[in-house]
Length: 405
Image (cartoon, rainbow, N blue to C red; front, side, top):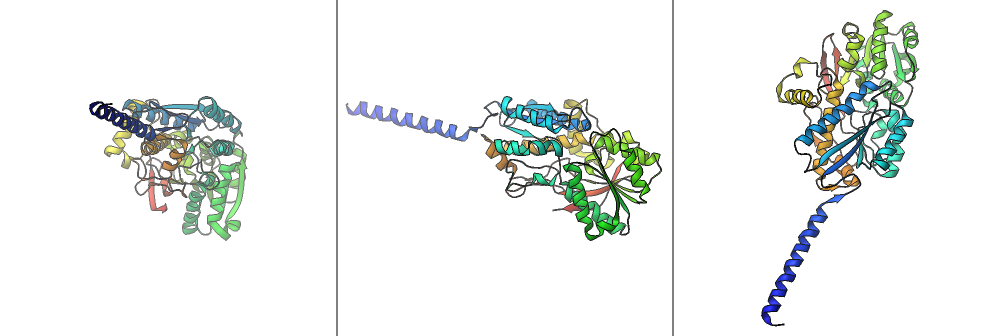
């Protein structure tokens, strides 16, 4: 080989090596697990679009509507979001069936915002055995923040025990001699709230709680339980119910003329889904805890954050109720996921999804002032701050400090 040919061959070799190096770098930058490609990210969801907790179906629809907005604006890092959201009717056995379908047949990258404590409990071990993220679950059960034993499951909203402790603290501060009656759903959700409440009252729980009764999610009414609680002589009531039963309870209290100081868990504090069906007059005086802006509150119905939410509702979720806080919830949870996916970049592995979800420090537009989203490798509770508020017959009125860390 003469010198000219040798130089040319060397240049070609160097060029080939450079191209190969660039190609390898490009390939190295893109990592995919099942459910992710250059063009799409498949996300699974399970919501009760039917059954006794169907009021929460609004959340799944809102999430889909937010993903429609994201896709219309070009997706995330050039990828469109494909939302496969299935109905489980709030039936844990059905949840298992739907989770298997999403993971094994639809081959989603992860499951997002599955609703309810019993449904999520039913798939908890399965998701972790499969090493598929069970991300930002729509339940505040304390068990969702256990990265040591369940590294593929992460909560979203404030946990039930912490919220119940806030209610207990408020009672100790304002009515130290209260006689308390409690109704709770007889499952992990209800028992989690009850434990936090009793822990918050401490040694006084045994004397202050004069009556506590449970109900099943399949019960047609809770009328008899409420009559029993009234007859206990209680002057304070902690209402641990999902929306359908919360509305029933508020109505029944008015019918039987029982007017205790009424604490309602935040998961049923929607004006549109609970208080209006129960009657606004009947709902006056109820106390709850909040971390999201109430869409019926005039103080939040202004500014760019409200304008953006309202524009999204009208364009992408036109059938959604503007008075239903579940639409604020779905909007906010979806925004949290979008941030996770943005941080993940081109490394769309399940492991990296969980890593990014555990690396958040941000505020979101429809969270209350003073409430943020913060996670870490050992902190799987994204939202941990809440403020008490009381319903005045028209709007929720915030009061006191923001609790939490």
